[in-house]
Amino acid sequence: MSLITRFRPAPAPAEDATPKKAHPYLSAALTAGAALVVLLVLIVPNGVARHKVGVFMPGAFLRIPLEGLLGAAILIALPTRARRIAAVLLGLALGLFAVLRLVTLGFLYVLGRSFDAVLDWPLLGDGYNALTETNGRAVAMSAVVGAIVLAVVSISVLTLAVVRLARITAAYRVPATRTVTAVLAAWVAFALVGTQLFPSAPVASDTAARFVKSTALKVPAAIRDKKAFAAEARKDAFANTPPNQFLAGLRGKDVVVGVVESYGRSALEDPKMAAVVDPVLAAGTKDLAAAGYSAKSGFLTSSTFGGGSWLAHATFQSGLWIDNEQRYRQVVSSERLTLTNAFHRGGWHTVSVEPGNTEAWPESAFYGYDEDYDSRNLGYQGPRFGWSRMPDQYTLAQFQRNVYGKPNHAPLMAEITLTSSHQPWTATPKLIDWDAVGDGSVYGPMAKTGKSKSSLWKNPEKTQNAYATSIAYSVGALISWVEKYGDDNLVLIMFGDHQPVPVVSGPGASHDVPVTIVAHDKKVLDRIAGWGWQDGLKPSPQAPVWPMNAFRDKFFTAYMAPEEPSSATH
Image (cartoon, rainbow, N blue to C red):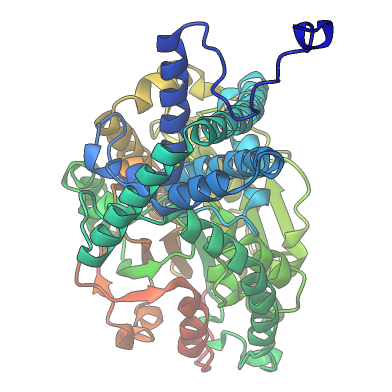
């Protein structure tokens, strides 16, 4: 043997050879874990978010992902260098997909709808602000940091998982090819039969592909919607109405719009929640009738669910369907005629009372308000109740003191947002004597009886009860104010902005909210006799249901025609 032969270096092992294993069981566990995490990301259906948390639903996970099979086939077929690059890119893409899926599942759980990757990014900032208001800045910042860490970890883990699986399938190319072929045949068979072991989750899964496709299609859809919505907003049959005809049927009346946060249909029709709310509505109907008031009620279908109150407000006021931030920004930067602006043009003094606002509200000019009240100038010196900065009774007392109670005031149109029924419903005040409200410091002991969000929300039944209690309080405060301070010229419009989150309203709940008009002058309600609304503060399940954007035009039509002006004084 020559020296050259003797000392010739041994050939390098093939790149795709199975790496030496420090421990065969550990290597197998890592490979199984990599396959499992990739599988779970690809097959989890959106429907899981609508079912009870913590309940294992095996049918939702017994699925074959087409995307995984195609990805494996590509990695098996590619040469070594291209396979490594493809594995990293596929892993990164799968990680980003996982992050979007987590956000979507969160939206489904909280807002009852999927995340729009084009239009919904601003809502993440709103969510942070809401969390800050309810749980403090430290908790909100911790949530943000946690979300970022989770996103980075998800992307990293999935990238490493795909790279490992690519290396293993290359090392065992023949059995991997046979396995992929067999499973693909099974996928085709299940697809042809349409087998499902979980609602809307077929065994032959293409969830990831459909999700990516729908996300990609939202970009051109958003562009088209922006143009179409702009054209729709410009068409307004009431835009050129002469000022002296605006709402002439309400001349001499004071119109107060009371928006009850999260007052949804579920509060009236879920038996356990209705048991809390119904007595307040029944007693309120009776007490208002004794005071000479009548009421008619129906339902509106809100443009939002579980949150996004400003979208519902804009829909109600503008007569346009505002269900995303793009449409909202478009309408508030336009000259669209709102309900408030119609009253303003007709000679009413217009006032907004928004106790949840903590800074200047630019949209006030769009709506047409002459005067704004918010948390900065309502003078509240008491404690907060969850998200709500002040009890609704205090808000109404300040409105009475500063606006409605002033002698000889001009005809008034006011919108008051009642925030005591805003989630998380951890603390709800109680009605007290109106003369005892003062600067709000009297509420101190009540706030101390509240529960933490974590302890309350662990039990859906307790959460529902707390929500119903807050609705009963908010509606009760508004009714009590009418009874004590309302006069013959008062017209009250009360409606909910949206349904509560799914944990309260339940899976598959509608977007419907109650709406009521209360008036002392029977002529006011005679004008809406054709609406089919029902007597009293509670609409029955058979009451008419309109889309919320239909209210403005129906209201204008009912009250534009003139009548003899009222001679009553304020």
